[in-house]
Length: 349
Image 1: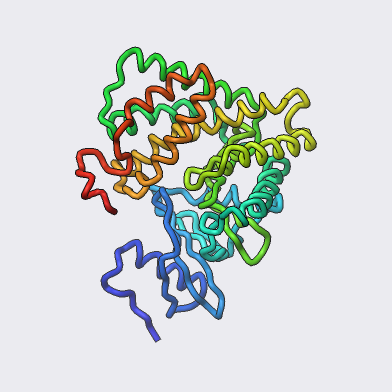
Image 2: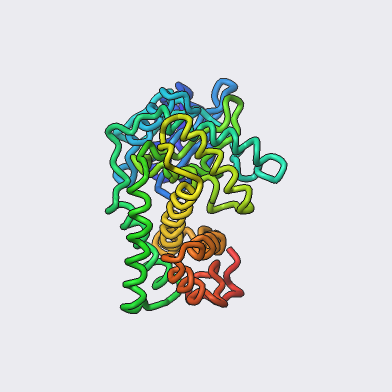
């Protein structure tokens, strides 16, 4: 019996459904949205023979599925719990993968659960840093890091705030960016997930956490993923708790020989602070770019939390205090969650 495609489906949706039906040998298969991310990639859930599967759709040429497959294989070989791949089609941008379900770390985190859940995440992070080779990965080098922080100027300061950066401000920003980039490149370099946080860690029926969204991995600074996790753009913990977790990880890195015995708590804290600042400054620009260029306005809701990180942490370091002061001044009295040129009353999304 034939099961024709619904006429309302787009060409890509028809291609996706046809591919999934063929991959699972089920001509009656249907797909339901599972999730989407900040890229063009999307995920679709299928039920077949009393099991749930996910179809990853990475439409060429906007997305390339091969990095996801290659990095996933590298992580799986090191014992990191990533989705199993049952079959894939790199030319068409589809993969049939294990369904981890819908239980993200983020909604499960609270004062009672966080120590246990972060202990599991930190164990997985240490395993990545010890056991996942960074050989052949692109370097998270000075040029790459610099391009990221420079997103702050056109997208956050100019597009979102309408602030024209003067010559003196530009010189100050350049100096601050150089400090952050130097801090990152002068650390030991290792495998870096680059988005190791509560929306990319999952509670699964197997070993926790399930790790997703790893296709952007690079060889980069050893505190980068630690800062992504502990200074998460989507949830905040008190400074004493964060420092205890970070210093506990420092000791594990020392024990594993991944950092030298000369890296004392003060040095490590500076690495951690400034690496997190590089990430959060990038995010201020990136979230605004996602909003204005790509129409993903929901990312603006997270700007106040990220800005608070930047202002607080930069203010702790004398050479970065002018950056903190600038950002505090230009955002005073502004609703950062509201798109520019939009009345606050119309900002509900």
